[in-house]
Image 1 (cartoon, rainbow, N blue to C red):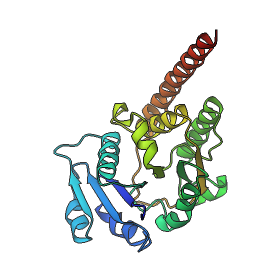
Image 2 (image 1 turned 180 degrees about the vertical axis):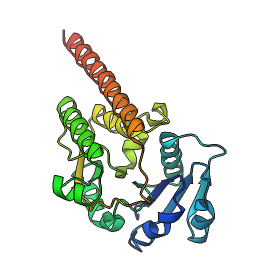
Image 3 (image 1 turned 30 degrees about the vertical axis):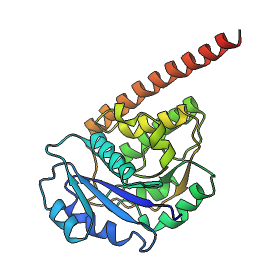
Image 4 (image 1 turned 90 degrees about the vertical axis):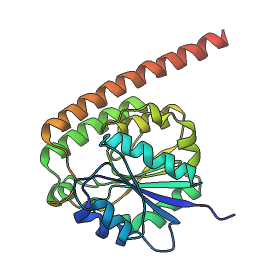
Amino acid sequence: MKEKIIVVLPAYNAEKTLEKTVMEIPSGVVDEIILVDDRSKDGTVKLARTLGLTVFQHEKNKGYGANQKTCYKLALEKGADYIIMVHPDYQYDPRIIPYALGFLKLDICDVLLGNRIRTRKEALSCGMPLYKYLSNRFLTIIENFITGQNLGEWHSGFRIFKRKVLETIPFEKNSNNFVFDTQILLQATYFNFKIADVPIPIRYFKDSSSISFWRSVIYGSSTLLALGKFCFLQFKKIFSIHNKKK
């Protein structure tokens, strides 16, 4: 039986970049594209319907994490075997989808991220703000060290999940804000799913979505708190196994 592949787009005020993003999703590879709109103030919903996307709109603005929760729930309800999350801000190049899917289909990994930061020179010359680059590097080093992963970056807006990952981890309990991105990867690590990444071209420009410096500070602090909780749960898990062996 043919496996079902669904792309989900968590959108908020994405009218200026949505069409360019959708047009670069390779035809014939994806079965359905779902856009979840977090109560945009522009013409995102109208444009999405014109493009033939499946559209779901929140009744009120709930936040980035809540948007992803809806995306994944809808994809699972529709029977997706592979769920591809892409930010609709044209920052991530969806043309890599057929190649990235191969890593999951070969069971090399269960979760795959697009890694924007191949070199410092490339990231900065393509427009990534210096403070974002430095915070990304800092947090990724800590996240890799604590979890034992070896990812090029933890904060990518291009992610592919096998169905079994989203059916197993309790992503509904995560934050409705930006730290959701970190929490879902920590959950995948906790449940021993295989996580990997592939290079993806970086595109930063005026219409790319971006959080402010102070919201980045809040995001970084929330990420460190999530890592602290992960450490606690890991120690608790190890202690429990040790006691059972006794």
